[in-house]
Length: 318
Image (tube, rainbow, N blue to C red; front, side, top):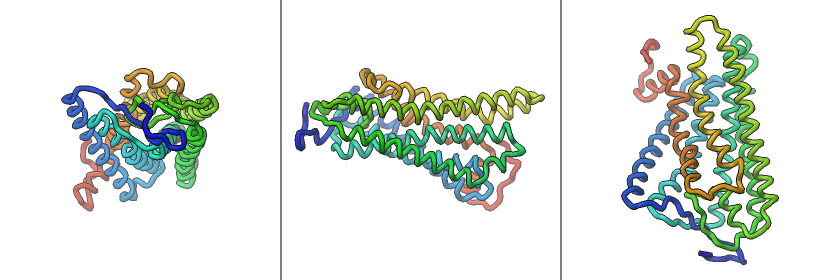
């Protein structure tokens, strides 16, 4: 199906979504709609708690607040399209709408990659250089790192979209996905896409692989420091502050690398859409629980905010 043409180019795309049986589509819609609402609630509470609690105005929680705010934006870019895919098999999206959604999706995904690396570096300083941590990670540096994460993500997305938007799309206009993504668009173009593929690949490596190397280096140093702690209780306490973050890093980076490291071969199989669900829905849903809700300071501050109490006992058991 070619669709409407404007000046010899496709004016709209058709998103295939998830062509399954109606009962299963309804079940999946209810499931992911519930996850969507819970993710909105979790991240909104975390952002509000960190913003309204002076004792949490420290670099560690500053980065957590940025991550939760990013997740709020991220799921509102991707999840509504996922929900729509369960309601209708074929959905139309204009060329401009597709490129706009693609820009914000890439920008937020790249920003999260860099922000995860920044958080790993912050944990490295806190565990490996605890006495020098206040001087090594002042609030001014934390602000610059956060701004650099956002700026790098949005600039990388702008460069990718600059090359993708210059391609011609003559037909067909069917995208085998529930949202506009780089690989299916590259597969649909009728012009030479080698330059766009090369730019996409290089920027993907820079925005994914380099932060991943920073994460691996930080955690290698963290693990080496933890192993030198003399008591078993001290080692468990130190490792517990990093294990959850490391688990999400592995899930997010592995799925992202699998999807974007080789753009030419992507979306040939339907299971790639399942992988997209992992990092667009499941990871944002788990992040608040993994990063924040296991932290006693955040939980106590959250209780104060939700219950509206001025004082809350500091010895409440976790």
